[in-house]
Length: 99
Image (cartoon, rainbow, N blue to C red):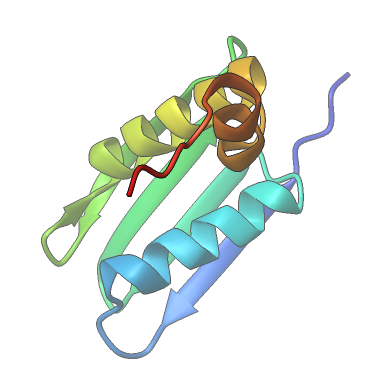
């Protein structure tokens, strides 16, 4: 049986997209498979799917769980296939300066 790691995040003031992204990134880095974010009566739930993608539901202000899950899935796919974006750029591109 697989054990899931859940993170719950509660805000007292309306969070910005920067705050939400940072909290989600921290939870994923800690190994969370299920993330619940609440602000008052508003809630977003993010759940890692077996294929590695994320499913998101709910709303916090104008931010939807679905949009956040899509961004998280794209980022995970990029990290899994290409690794660190800076290292990828250094390995595949050469910057030249012409004066």
